[in-house]
Every structure is written in structure tokens, then in C-alpha cells.
Amino acid sequence: MLIRHSALLAASIVTMASGAAFAETDWPTRTINVIIGAGPGGDTDFNARTMARYFEEVTGGTMVITNMPGGGATIATSAVKDADPDGYTMLFGHTGHLVVTEVSGLADYGIDDFEICCIPAIDQGAVFVTSTQSGITNIDDLVARTDAEPESVVFGTEFGGYSHLQGTIFQAETGANMRVVDTGSASDKIAALLGGRIDVAGIAYGAIQDYHTAGQMVVLGQPNDVRNELLGDIPTFVEQDVDFVMNNPYIIAFPQGTDPEIVAKMEDVMREITEIPAYAEDLEAGFKQPVAFLGKDEAMERLNAIRDAYMPFREVLQSAR
Image (cartoon, rainbow, N blue to C red; front, side, top):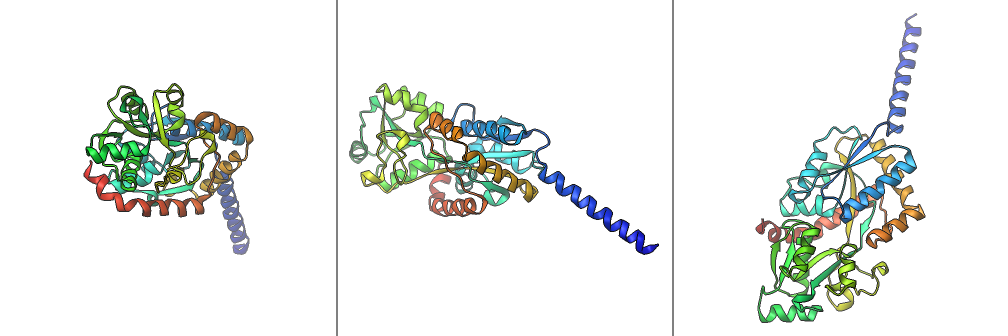
């Protein structure tokens, strides 16, 4: 009798374990809250919403996008970090949100405090632009202006954020001594450029393409190692003998402690999404962005390398706060 009861108990345990495993792999069974540290309309918001739309097509599950801008994205990242690790709160961010904030001291946490799922996309659509009224049409103009009068050229950014680091590294590589001011988000930068309040900014080309076409802004170059041909005839800075390369990977992450099976399933779903031709077409139409994907292991390798490369600029970013 004891043996029979033991066998029944063992069978019960196996059944419960199988049921738990099924529940995990059956994810999602309810709506996933995707939190992003940016407002509506920008490149991060676009990528998150595009991902969510295809996620729903692939899985039949649902996602809701929650915009939580502010604090250099720390409002969003802390909300995800502190959320219940049940697989139904997810961060869609980029290295500016989870690496630069750690380097700059805006956050006392970073990629090691999350379950990194994958790099679902890489922003290769960034450019440096100047306002037409600045009179700066190329890098030589910019350097000559700042050589003659240091800090006479105003660079607009968001202190402690990704574009702040862009400007810092750009100055280090070109020798251009610009005055860096906090202008806020991408839309704020555009308004400041058009209004002549700043001279230079780093921004997604898709956001300023119409102004460039209309002659209201001048594009200095793209900080990619090779040309993103989707941007048209815009040279890289490397082509202009400036060693300035900054790609910005997007990141999908969950709260620490989230079931590894859920994280792995999201990785597989995102990989499948990147193989859909219509998804590639949407990225090109939206922000001139080619398809890219790195699974968890490759993503962690890339993100750690980026963090190591950015750490030497920690003091500069922190002193601006």
C-alpha cells in the first residue's frame, strides 16, 4: 500500500510539473505591458509598436504599449525592474536607456539587473544635422568655427542620455569644442534647430528627412561603420576621416527572475518576426532602418562591449548632471 501511495504521489508531482511547464510555454495567456522610456512618435516608440503588431500576428497574444518618458528613461526602466517577474511586463528600450544611464550615473542599475532577451533591432538611422541658419555645412566648417571661437557652436541634447554621449564622443574625435545644452527629446531638438536656438544635434534621419529635403537642415554624416544605404547619399563619418561609429541597439528585457522559458520564447518570436518581409518594409518606411537581430548570448556580448567602450566618458556625463 505504501508503495502504491508513493507511486501515486510521484505521478501527481510529475503531472503538476508538466502542467507548470505547459503554463510557462503557453505564454502569453493575457496582455503583455510593454514599457518604453520615450514619448509617442519617435524611433523607439515606432520600433516597439511595430514589434507589438507583428508579435500579435505571430502569437495571437496581445500587447499594450505604455510610454513612460522622463528621467533619461529611468522612470520606465525602474518600473520594469521593480515589476512582478511573471512575463507580462517587458521593457523595449535601447542602450541609451540601460547602458548610458548607468555610465552617466542617472541610474544605479544596468543590464545586469534585468533578464536580457535579445537585441530586436539596431538603430542605424541616426545622423548629425545642423540648422541652415547656422551656416555650418560640413565638419570642416564646424571645427573651424570652434577653433576660432570655442563653444560658439551649440549642440542640443538630453543631459545624461544617448545623444549626450554621441556629442561627447563626436567632440573627442573631431576636436570641435561645442557648447552642450539640454534641449530635451527629439521633437524638442527639431524645434530648437528650426528656431535657431541650437546649431547641431544627433537625431534619427526619419524624423528630419522632410526638413533636410526642404533645405531647412544640413546632414553632416551618419555614425555607422558602413553606409546605411536606406538613408540615401549620406556619407559616414569614417568616410570623412573621423573615427566616429555609434550604432544604437534596441533591447528587449524582462524583470530579473522572469522564467527563462518565457524569455527564450520571446527571443524565438522576435527572431521569427525579423524574417517576415513586411516587417523589413515597415522598418524601412518608418525610420530607414535595416533589419537586425541578435539572440540573448550575442546581445549580452554586444551590450557588455558597448558598456566597456562608454565607461571612459563616465566623468564627462556625470559632470553635466
